[in-house]
Length: 302
Ligand SMILES: Cc1cc2nc3c(=O)[nH]c(=O)nc-3n(C[C@H](O)[C@H](O)[C@H](O)COP(=O)(O)OP(=O)(O)OC[C@H]3O[C@@H](n4cnc5c(N)ncnc54)[C@H](O)[C@@H]3O)c2cc1C
View 1 (tube, rainbow, N blue to C red):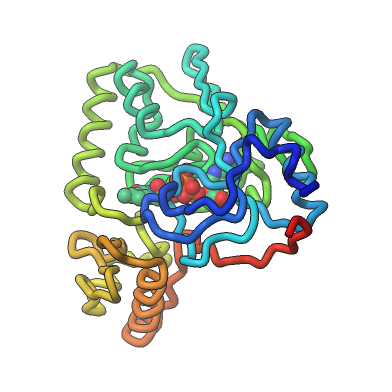
View 2 (tube, rainbow, N blue to C red):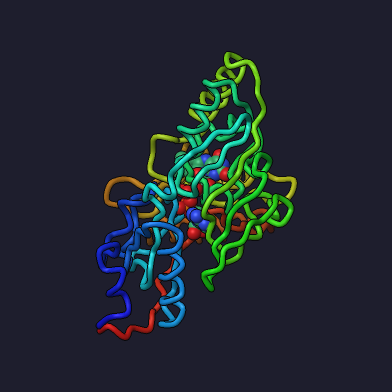
């Protein structure tokens, strides 16, 4: 019997991960697991830990670049109903980690609930947005998060208040914890005004970013006091290509993937940008996107 037998009808083997990411790139996951609920996920984590098999959670795959060799472990997707519910109590929302934030932000704006407009044009699940503190010049998701429910790798569940989550620029202090749900605190406002703000922010994004292309958003974090996109542009790299990957002409901090691109094309372009920006400006760029490299899992089932 293999270690994963008890999860068999929730596990897919050797599943291509590209179809679950915005880049649509990346090799297969050895196991793709869709837990029924938090308890099911906790059992899987315990088993995987015992077997020394790495586990990663994938939200909507909008901030990850997965290697062409895939991921030799368990990839968890929280897309079952248990993780995708939204409950409103006044101006508070209890949202599951798998909830798709953009439609939620639009619905809230139509109902005159303000606080999520800054997420217009940012694809994310609640879990991914907590980890990344998704946002930009108009605000950040962390501001409206009052507390989260976190599953630890040993299977225990904890409630973390806002201050413990450690929201910073495009990161949080979640560590290995898996977000199960979040409680958001929004503000009641005039629906017309909130909707207009949401639409204006979305239009700004559509004008300035290649939202229709395959990407994972901004590749690099902005160095303190600088814009990564401006540095890449000034280094003469707008439009630069490697294979079927290209530095976007609309926004130089986006690398877009054309038909036939590989993750390796994007990785080459990332290295090239880093090297050029280092040589021209002496600035070290840090990636904002998360790169999933293949990990060798110890296997007992084969
Ligand atoms: C066109 C485009 C535009 C974008 N613009 C912006 C922008 O303006 N601002 C911005 O901040 N980002 C932007 N992004 C990046 C992306 O939208 C955000 O980083 C978003 O938060 C990713 O959420 P996700 O659910 O897709 O997470 P994923 O990409 O699936 O995962 C991101 C990280 O979160 C972790 N994670 C996912 N779910 C959970 C969970 N339940 N518990 C714990 N960890 C979890 C993953 O393991 C991974 O480490 C853009 C991306 C695209 C494609």
